[in-house]
Length: 164
Length: 143
Image 1 (cartoon, each protein chain N blue to C red):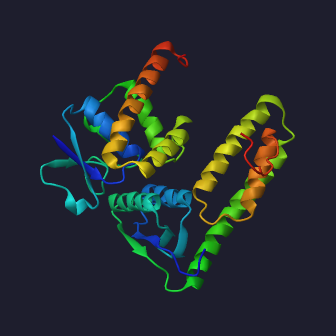
Image 2: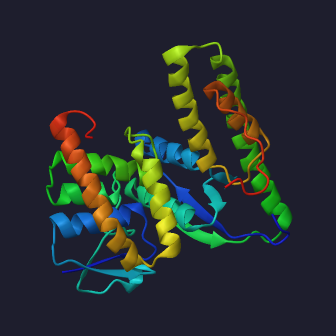
Image 3: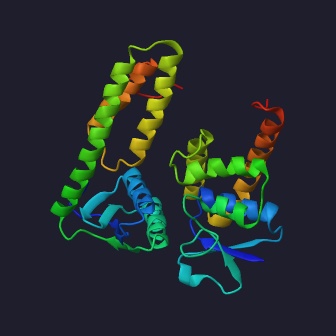
């Protein structure tokens, strides 16, 4: 990340406490998108076409639940503020990657179809975490390695020069 | 009829355009706008905030169009599962094709403009339809 703060898409929202099911669905969706929480009722993601669209859909869900919501494009006034936000998001992903790596390690005790099923499930989970990972903590590589080991993939060596 | 959607089409909008042309309006003409305020008065908007043919609850726009136009074809609903997972990726359906289709569409949108993306994805969705039609009839993966 350079010293110039980048653009973020922010969702300011408020959902009525009751009924609780739309409120919980909105909360789950935001968690799935990997948003950073700025303050209560204000979440953000680094801005791109996809993140902006996804937060706009959530804003519509909030309105449909009789809440209030607005989507904004913003730039942190200081690089420090952005680093804190990025750090918060990277730390949240790091916890998820570590949990995944631990599960992959435990699953090496499995064999045959049970192991293949564990590989499929953990690969899917890894893909979902990576989709909401914007700042790649070091734990990511460890998680990728743990799943690759479980799958019995050959260790990938960096390739030099053109083999073909 | 004229149909309008947001510029920079991706999986849901490309699939919807195909669905509209094949199953709703063979004469459909598509217009792309940057902002909802630019929607022409004589056009039907889809996959935009605040319009009827859009995301509703957990449905993506493709699913909404199937419901609004009473399209009960099970093959279309199978395609809807793939589009849903490629677009929203919430694990509601088991659609392993979604990840690949999502990448293919993202790549296309990097090198083509919107009309060209629709032109190229038309045969892709025709093929996907035929594949899943045969799969449904056979009750297994078609050769």
